[in-house]
Image (cartoon, rainbow, N blue to C red):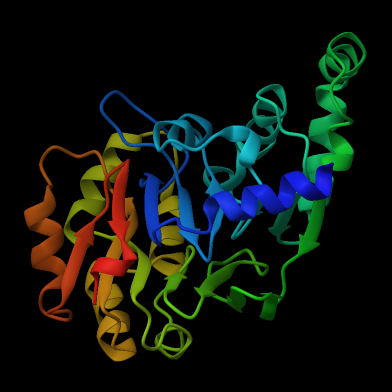
Length: 303
């Protein structure tokens, strides 16, 4: 029965258009009045629905895109900063309460197994109650964890996934991801400092989704945060990419379109789309998306 349900799910999704739904688009974990949500994405490709990162708000974002949570089947976490996996456990638990009974393949860095085990323990009272009282399947056993490393991650009849270590100190296990089928190629930079080698990794992609900082807006953002010393500012400079450098990567990679994402800042009313376009324009002349929560990019329409 489970095998039939999995095959039926694949059949139902086989005609899905290749697209990326940018669910959460701000850099950093904090949310404020008027701000966007931290990083999460829904990638529809190769007849599959793949969640890439699980920042705060991912569950509602998926539902708003029309995804049935019981269909959750594959999740990638690029690195272990809270704005990329804070809502991972709650997403899977909520999917379970919404009818999930098939396996979820979870890919992420070393340490993700510890997070999942401790999330299950933290929710043990609720999980045991719902399992006994509502007849639900064992939640812990529904998740299979695969530890990411550089190189080929997944290869099946419809899709090839590869990972590349990027530069996001002090973390070591932090990755860019490439998803490629016969018809579509999408690359996520993950959080990274300017990394020229990423251009080769993304070469010829239909869409490069690259993190970006607006250099001129950083002093005002730092002043607004107000509860940290200069280590945060230094972290931004050594661990993230300015918008114009994201443009360089896209140009060198000869991609069809660039979406700048994980925006720092994303919620300053003094800086809007025109500032991001102005920052990228000197280095990238192609199609540019300045990400907003809920933005959907149809890959099939980029050619």
